[in-house]
Image (cartoon, rainbow, N blue to C red):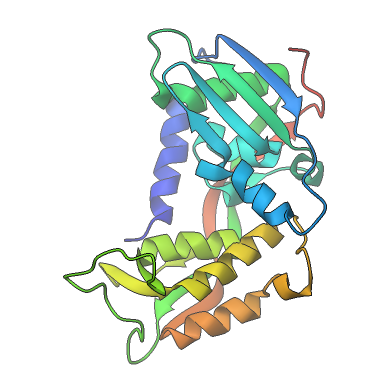
Length: 262
């Protein structure tokens, strides 16, 4: 399944439902604080992943929490787009915030993104406009001869001792996008799940950490390069080649570094 054309529909439908300045849901109250610094020793990567469990977003019927999030990361969540669909100044990827927000009684958590929009526009004075622009990306496709990784067995059962686990090509493309800092378009035409080695997943995790600006703790945890990842993908009987496509983008015109007081 090709995931990226659906993003255009999401962005355009979002524009129709809640145009900038239009009435939208908002949190009852929200507390915003700068995140504490990460640990500086060899535990910092573990520290980061503990903070970012569930992608740094936790919600229940009464409140939602965003942990260790930059404005650059909060904007895609709020406007229901992918990170590559946001054009923002570099400084918006620097400061990290912890946000705890109360959801009004009777309002569904499904509307948390729209409430986050209201918070960003109110507390950070965020303004934006929409354009369509060519975006650099990678295209994931099946190489000649087909994939060299096996399909998930029909009798597959999870085991803690397993060295591989099932993943769809759409899911793999998303993981690659996070690791490469660039969208990955799934054009493999491969349905179902394939058994991806855990050491490759670890490679992508390290690369993703590097994309988030967290340096490796030591030489043994060196951040993999794009070429390292592409070579591993090729060993799976897949191809990962650079390309360009037109996508709708959210261009940030203005935002304050310091939000209004709690």
